[in-house]
Image (cartoon, rainbow, N blue to C red; front, side, top):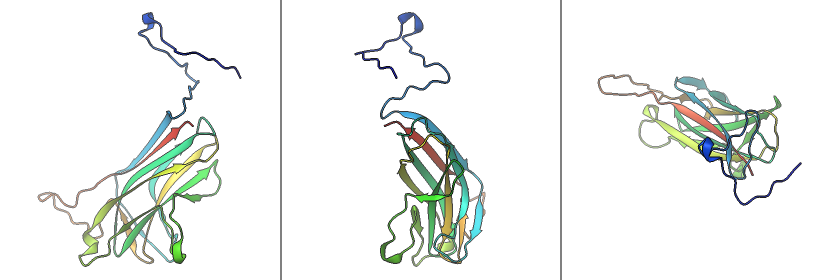
Length: 195
């Protein structure tokens, strides 16, 4: 591998002072964003949970990225709107590498035997929970140390035996005149950042 040491690189004035990296080549600059992948879900979905701490279903939010460098970190950011029939909703971020098994990432600690999640929405109060749906977000830093294809998938769940709703509430009122219940979008964005 060659090494070029200079104080400054400039484009030629006849080329609008532009430096062009040819197609198929990548200029890796520490701290720079190499690529960005985005996905959005604009429809609604419903999942009736069973028993078990990790009883979840996909939200439909999936991003696939193939890192340019094994030293890169991957930043995963999501904002997902959930409703539920009772108590609590949760999100789990899963990662697979090169078609392998799913690994949960970005979860909290299992304190006192409690279940783990990447993000949680707690609806438990004295008002009617079935009318509520709230945005739940998080930003996760991952260091997968690979240049193989990575798939990040966001899963949703709820309190055991309850139903979780994507981009809607349980009651799901409909009034065009009064403007409720509006349908939001849920989104995931993934960045590769060179180290």
